[in-house]
Image 1 (cartoon, rainbow, N blue to C red):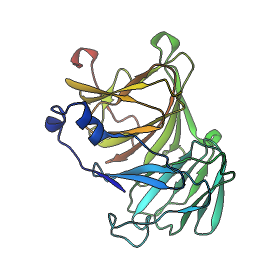
Image 2: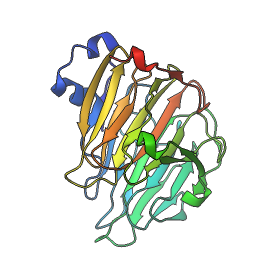
Image 3: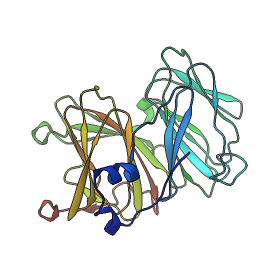
Length: 276
């Protein structure tokens, strides 16, 4: 498991590009026949991917977690961005087609990933956060997610936010998770931008061609930085940082949040005049 430590904004403003990428960007999410996870000390979120090809993959708790099994004190959200597969939870199997999601409650002991066809594998994107209560596991097809339509063509930000793990869809302790799909010819997300001191966030960008990029904006509003992000890469966004992006083409991203509350609209808006 890759470990990322929390960084003070005053330290981060001094980082060059290499240091910014080292601390905040995860360049590889999906590895063949591996569960590839990153443990961030920012609100102790774990994120990453599972891509079973030749067999099954079972989620285990490592030394970093100090528990008997992975979800002993955690909850989890998963969205499949690949082809068809299955997730087995304590012996109960869930079919997971492309863009299907699932919320898994604390206390689930056995989590096993499998692809229907190893030549066209499933890609299970994972977010897991600490939990204090067990809520029921819920399979969430994209048609069952809560759609929120935002933006317009004039501002190049017409998009649909699909809320998967959200109070409007299912109960969770603190995890919020969903997927935002930008329409063709639209490239901006979350501008005007914001911060939310009560929660951190991880962005995972995908559905991008090899020769396209997203310019992810981060940092304090008066001290912004940027990172060039490729297909299927993820960014850690601390609570003090803006999290906005513009692409060379349209794209999709999965967002996962955890922190003090689950109020999706609890954010501190940033005035355009305050951006530097």
